[in-house]
Image (tube, rainbow over all chains, first blue to last red; front, top):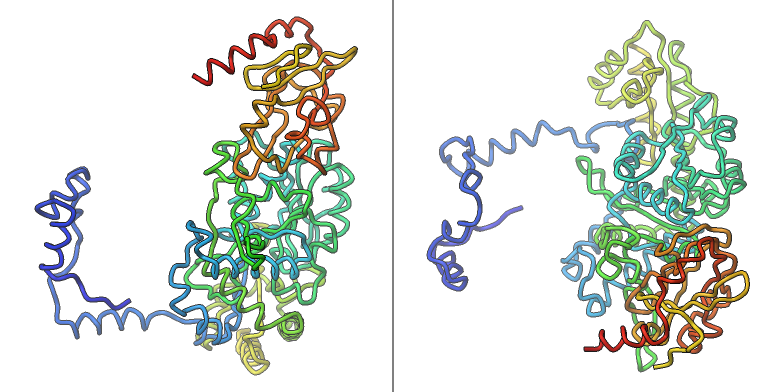
Amino acid sequence: MDYAPNTEAQLEDMLRVIGVDSFEELIEAVPEAIRQPALDLPDGEAEAAVISHFEALAARNRPLSATTSFLGAGAYHHLIPTVVDALASRGEWLTPYTPYQAEASQGTLQVIYEFQTMICELMQMEVSNASMYDGASAAAEAVVLAMRATGRNRVLVSETVHPHVRQVIATYLSGAQAVLQDIPSVNGVTDLEALGKAMREDVAGVVLQQPNVFGALEPMAQASALTHRFGGLFIASVYPVSLGLLQPPGAYGADIAVAEGRCLGSPIAYGGPGLGLFTTTNALLRRVPGRLAGCTVDQDGKRGFTLTLQTREQHIRREKATSNICTNEGWLALRAAIYLSLLGPEGMKDLAAQNFDKAHYAAAQLSGIPWVKPTFDQPFFNEFALTFDSSVSLEAVQRRLSAAGVTAGYPLAGWYPSLPQSSLWCVTETLSREAIDRAVSALRSLA
Amino acid sequence: MKIPAELLYTKSHEWVRRESAEVLVGITEHAQQELRDVVFAELPAVGRVVAQGEAVAVVESVKAAFDIYAPVSGRITRANVALTKTPQLINQDCYGAGWMFAINPSVTDEFAALLSPSDYGKQLETQAH
């Protein structure tokens, strides 16, 4: 982010326009104690010295491109076609924010409308909003919607839903009269029998993730049918890339389907930003949180776009609003729309097949090591859990692979204490067979 | 402003028609005029038990959404499903085909708290000034 600072003359100009004599006068309203925090910075250095200092710091980063990474666990490394950056960085999209002068932003509204259309197609759902902060907050909004739509307050969440998503749901419900209940898993997937026992007429919604946190495939259709038998809403949290291969949420009767959409053309940059996908059925249209772009015709019969159904939103409906979100992730939704239109349905199938094939190849090779075995016996998409013999420490695995330029899978013990010797391995289209083979032989040489 | 003489009213602009075992509820002409073009009505589930003053339905126009309150306590016996397809009935015939729901009252003396046609008319006049 290169910039040239304002000159003294420019600062004086601005102060004169505002009508104050000095910068200190401008910030007078700010309590003195926090006005000028003492920053522990060294004295000024020459420009060249500052640049080389920061270059040295940056060199300590290990970019994904410089390693063979098996990390996934909710943040997945996918190729971003160059055209996504080329189009998304055009000046027309300079303001990434949700349009407030909506009808004057026809281009942005059209992008949102097309984004919604493509997300509906991908999910096979009837309605998509303009996007939300991230997959976790979309899941929490889905739970809130289910409670409001059913007038019930018990929510069942499988323990195979990503722990961060479960935490965000718990945070959203912390002020509400809600009962949040975890459903246990057996052999890496939701225990349908336990779910059946927990189901009652007071259950607002059931949340399952597909593929689940272990990468394993859940019995979505059965769980959905079970939920509906008791009048609850079925909420599916899905992985968009998997939908080129797996059944879409609409096919198994999900009432609400949410996802982390960052994998569609945006980088996993240091934890953020995310792109929340939120889709539902026509029956729940008026309860959708956030923005919705609609297509219409103007008085001359020409096609135009508009923000629609705004009576759900808090600037009109105040405390009765469906949600306090009045925005969207405009720029990331744009990237997802470019990415999806570039790949198309066939491209999404190819992408999913590559992820599936490479992950299954890697799983077979890694499980061929005598002291490594699959943690669960379940079908999976592009991620799987491995359990290491107790004679091998996960730290040693990580160190050995790191020395060979490989980032090992994510240790599961922090999230699931009953799996102290297990880690989660993800393989996307970014890994070549050679890279996988190199990683496997590096690991094999450990013991 | 039409304020039928045979109905009772609430301060929040609902009308109440007492029938044998139930009361019919809708919104007044004043309310539908204020709302302008109604585009959606969210109705209560039949069988739901409601308390006097509780928000039980929602009427939405293009620009706003308003809660509709139960004028008396009781159980919802019917909802006007015609409104789900044709919410404009509320504008066209607010005292007839645009009725919203029916309640089987559980507390008889709550009717005393409702407004007579003349009291409701006075309230509208006061509001206008």
